[in-house]
Amino acid sequence: MRQHKATTKKSYRRIPSATDQAEMPIELPDGMRDRISRKAYELWEQRGCQEETALRDWLEAEEIVMRRDP
Image 1 (cartoon, rainbow, N blue to C red):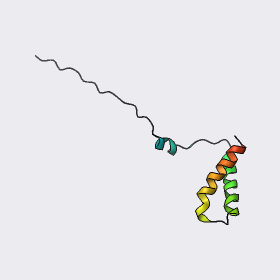
Image 2 (image 1 turned 90 degrees about the vertical axis):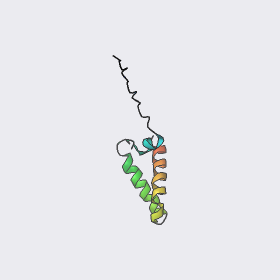
Image 3 (image 1 turned 45 degrees about the horizontal axis):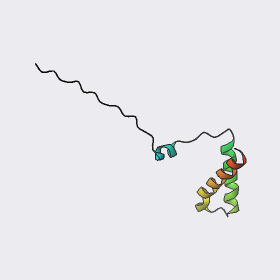
């Protein structure tokens, strides 16, 4: 009678990619999202309320607020 060797599957833990990490939202301190939003709106108004600048305004506002309020 032949005995079969038990096979075991190795389980691999998936390492998160840079894309996965970018999709995970970060938690901001209380009130910071509101300050970023107000600053982004202010920048958007200064640039003439142009729809195509909304993302640039938001990213610049994040940089300004986070630099000022670490």
